Image (cartoon, rainbow, N blue to C red):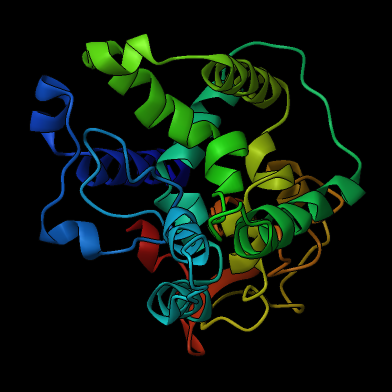
Length: 283
């Protein structure tokens, strides 16, 4: 039941964040006041339906200017989300995370990744989101949003493809970069068929940043050791596998809460500021 409710919340989030129907009808981008709002999920600014901004794109947009600027507003939004709930937004609100969950349900060869691969996303965040856009400058002193330009599958799926289909002028300007982005998107989607949340695990820079707050966030998962039977059932249902499940509030935990609901002994519960909320979330 919890997974069904989570899917419903994910669907509502995806539709709400991309609710500008006029963008799809006219091949334009929403530029109203809501675009100033940064939501801690991977949802491309340039998607015709997007009504809010992507924090990763916003960080890069300021870093690539002629004068380097660090967005304390965007950093504050990400930090606030992390402090309050860790990676909760990854598990419940992110449209691209929702797509990955759906893809993994398709029958395909499933396999596990070595644990060391989860560290790649920290390299992506540090190098492609922050360092290169700020310091790898052209002759005019301008940087390039490397992650958005080369590595973001959400940007290709939500913005590049729809806009190229809707706007003839854009179609006429397509070249090698667009071909690369299509190829990269296809590889990522294929990857997600075999590995649950493959992009989140390995490459997502936003997930990397939010993961730093998992152990200290107000929203936590707790275990009552007196009730725990050590049956390993939480391992079986954990999105990130048996290697991570015994360690509560691990940086990879996306707060899906399947372990809490499925525990036969009721030993697991979710908490906010120490107030036990076992079962309340599920009704």
